[in-house]
Image (cartoon, rainbow, N blue to C red):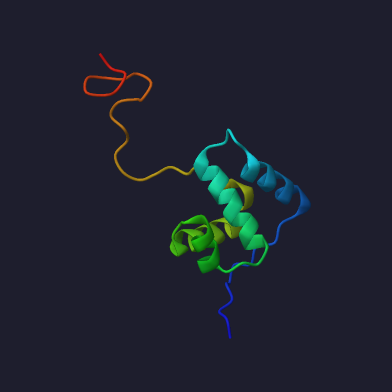
Length: 102
């Protein structure tokens, strides 16, 4: 018997429309596009391991996104604050030793 996730993903028509648009977007950030594709696969009932293999991501990433989407819905597709020290130089400003700097 196959293991069944405690976080089933079912999409409303509105959610599906937004997610499909993001999954096809050519100018959205790559991470958002990948998250949207994963959610579409989850909604289709595919297994976490199968999705991970198809999209070349880790199974744990798919599993975490499943849980995150189940709790946060469309907000789960957006970037969340990351832990760790913030960047010291902004990419736009440049700096000594950075490409584009003086």
